[in-house]
Length: 615
Image 1 (cartoon, one colour):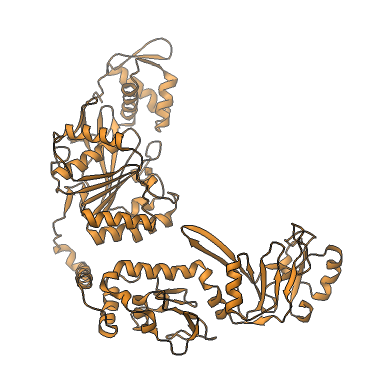
Image 2 (image 1 turned 135 degrees about the vertical axis):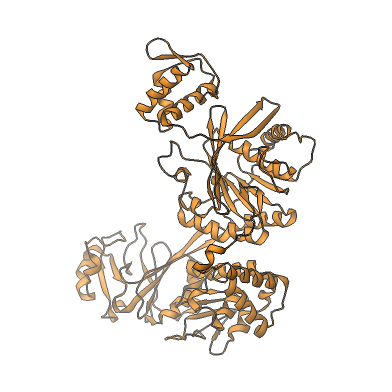
C-alpha cells in the first residue's frame, strides 16, 4: 500500500526492534525500492514522517483513537504490536511532533503523539519486541487534512488547550459574581461561518481569520473558546475582550484580565451583552482608579507623602501581604509565631513592645497534632497571662490542605469567607506545597496566581513559616532561605529567628511597606511545663566571627548540658555552622578568657560557668 506513494521515505530497523540502528538515520532516507533488500533480511523498517507531508497520529489510548475516527476523514491505518493505532495523514506545513498529554485529577495522562518531521513509525509487517506483528487494518488511501483540521481534532488531548479551560475557570473565580458566566461564548462570537460538530463548532477565527478555515473552536455547553493559531482562549469575558479589541487574541491567557483591562471588558459586557452592574464591578473600577493614582512623575516624588500603613503587628507584619518567617531548627520559630498570633487575637502588644491590631487567626499546622499544639498554646497563653480567655485562633492540626492545589485553596477560601481572619499562618511552607521547593516557576505561579489573589480579595495577610539552609550566611542572609530565591523575591516581608545562648535575635530581612528595623534581642523566660514568655530587649550588637563561634558553642553546651568536651567535638559543631578553623580556636580562647571554660587534659575543656548571656 505504501508503495503507491513515491514521495515517502524509510529507515532501517533490526528485527524485533522499534528504533533505527543507523547513525544520523533522519538524514539517510531510503525509497521504497531501496528499502526492500533490508526488509527481506530484517523484516522491520520505519516510515519517516515529514517526507511528502506525512504525519501519523500514534494513538496509545482507545479513547483518542475513537475520537480520531469520529472527527477526521477515514485513512490508511495500522495496528501496532501493542494494540495501539497508527493513523496516516498528509498534513502540509506541519513542522513539529505533538505530544498529547493532559492532566486528569492532578495526574498526567499520556494519550499518544502526532509524529512529524524528525520522527518515524514502525512499518506494517514488522515484528514488535513482544512478538506481535504490525498489521494494516484499514487498507485505503492516505487522507489529506490541513494542519488546523489536525489541531482541532487533537485539541481536547493537548495540555495547551487545557490552558483555555484554566483561563475560563480563572475568569469565573475572579469575576463570577458579576454574572459574566451567564453570557455564553456563542452569544459573543456567533456561529456564522462555523461548522457544527456535536456540541462544538469549528471554523475560521472571527477576528483574524484562517488560511485553512479551521483554527477556531467553540464549545457553548462548556462556555469555552480556543484559537489554535494563538494557543489562546478562555470564557465569555476574554471572548468579549478580544472581540471588542481590548486585548489581542494571543493575550487571552490566564491572568491577563486584571485592573483597567478587566474594567474595560466588564464595561463592554454591560453595555453590549447585558451584564448586570453589581458591587464587585464597582470595586474593581475603584481599585483601578486607585492604582492609576499611584503612578508618580519623577518631579512629584520629592513632595509625595505616603499614606499611613496598616499593620497587624506594628513595624513587623503589615496588613494585606504575604510574608515568610524563617530560621534554623531549634530557634523557637513556632513558639515565637504562636506568641505573635495570641498577641494579635488578644490585642496585647507583641513581645510587650509592638502594638497589634486585634483580629482572628487561622493556623494550618502541617507537622503537629492536637496534643502538641494544646501544650504549646497553653505555655504561650500562660506566659502572656491570658490563659482564661477564649481567643479567636483556629487550628487545623496535621492539616492535609496544600496551598498549590485548587480544591484545597477553595477549602481554605471557604474558611476565610466564613471566619474573616486577618492572618493565615502556614506551618510549614515546605509541607504546604506539593512541588519541588527549588522550582522557581512554581514559586512564581504560587505567589502570582494563588496567594496574591487571596490577599487582594479577602484583605488578609498570609504568613509562611519556613527553614534556613544549614551553615552560616556568607553574604545576603536571604540567600540562606531554603528553596528558590523567588520565594524571597516575591515575599512582602521576611522575619528571621536566630538563637544566641539563652537569647533570641529577631531580624527583619525585608519589608516592602516601611524601612526595615534593626535586629533586636528577645529574652526567654521559660518555666518548664508551665509557661514561656518572650520579651523584646535592646538592639542586637553585631559580633565578630570569634564571638559568633563562642555563641554557637555556648548554645551547644547549654542545650546538651555538657560538663566537659574534647576539641574535636566542639570543632565538629562549629564547622557545621560555617565557622572557620582560625575563628574556632580564637572563639575557644575567648571563652577561656571570659571564665566560661577551663582547659583540662590534652585537648579537653571543662565548663566552669553556664551563664548563656556573657556574650
